[in-house]
Length: 246
Image 1 (cartoon, rainbow, N blue to C red):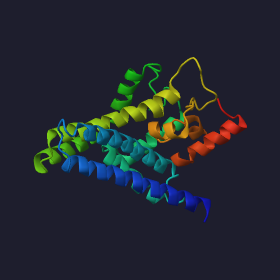
Image 2: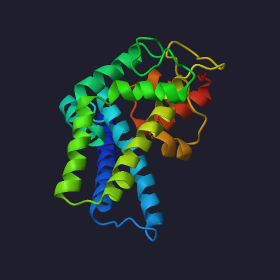
Image 3: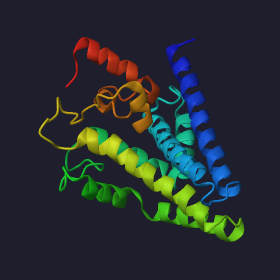
Image 4: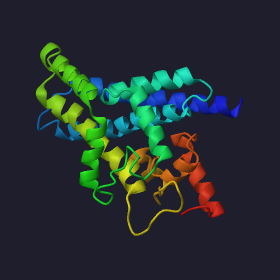
């Protein structure tokens, strides 16, 4: 089996598991869970799990942008990536992909769409800028249609929509921003090692997986953007071994 074929098989299997898990939790949370004091521990657990799976959905779509989800199959990457971005928040594939490539070309500069040059040390202000740049009319329309359908047509209780749909979506955006954008690219006294203007976390693999599907190994990602998320720990270990770290 070629390395690209193996990478595609692993990537697509993990993508199916993440997307399938997200869909299963979503349907369970919308239609089979009654929100009450008695079910509060379950509600909290489902919200946390759905937040994490939502982060995973975006990270898989990110791999698709780089062609590392299914190497050599651009249509597969585009279709899977577009589906996951739509399910995540109604994001448009081409717009998000183009903006991400701009991020790689101009990382940490005023031309970087993920960077807030006016507030490079303020996570709250930077997050607001980040949100306003990406959550446009298409996402607003998508979320509005979904919520209205669930509430008025499917009869999903408002508590379920707020706690098990809206809240995980918001929390996942904060998690992605904080661990995948702010911490790797924030300007602080430690500086950056090179032109990528990115740093990596010192997290172990389990914490790295829990926080942002290894996207905290961000310098490694910028150096080797075609490496899929699940292979970043190995790249990190190699960099540690070789002393090629910031």
